[in-house]
Amino acid sequence: GEPRPLGANPLRTVRPGQQPQRPASAPPEADRYRRADESVRPVLGGEPAPDGRSTRWADHREARRAELVRVARRTVHHQGPDVSMEEIAAAAGTSKSIVYRYFSDKTGLQIAVAEAVVLQIQGALEAVLRIAPTPRDGLRGMVAVYLEMIEHSPHVYAFVTRDGSVESGGPLGHFLDSVTALVAAPFARALADDDGGPDPAQLALAEAWAAGAVGFVRGAGERWLAHR
Image 1 (cartoon, helix red, strand yellow):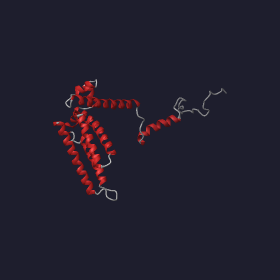
Image 2 (cartoon, one colour):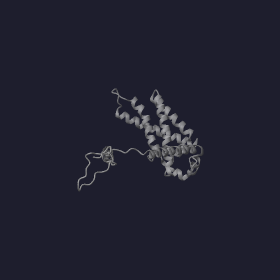
Image 3 (cartoon, one colour):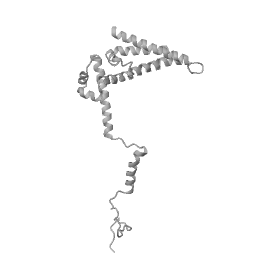
Image 4 (cartoon, one colour):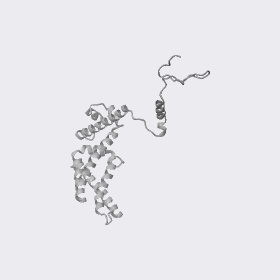
């Protein structure tokens, strides 16, 4: 008989009434298994690989937002807490409508600036506390750092604390809570009993005293900023 073409299947036959088999161009078995695996992966809890374009866009958006926060903070520092969104947009070299793409309103921008300020101040306070030889030295160092920072940029401090943002559960409200814990911690350790743990009553007194100290320093600092 005639020679078969290279790669022909000697078992491939078509009987009467039977549909011909799929051509050789059909996807190989490995490809079929791969497609089946991809189809069930979401059901099994797997996550598809992230889209590189969406990831790059998210990174770009986050970087642009951080840059607008830096520009807003710098503009407030030089021009005062009543600076307008138009002035902030102009300083950033863009339009107000672009700024509103990243922040819903001026309050949203205020909160974002407050978050940046809180991170900076909290980092400085923790650094001072780490090197303080005694709780009293740590407290004195934290008070000095706090007052120096608000004195350096009173406009920014006024911008992020206005409209009750400290008491409304915003970034500065949480910041004051964390500072209270920072102040209380070394005193609580100093009051620890012989077993290495603080007495609950003494710990409660240390936390109450720390909250009073933070409130006193904040109140004195803000009055000084207002009246000099």
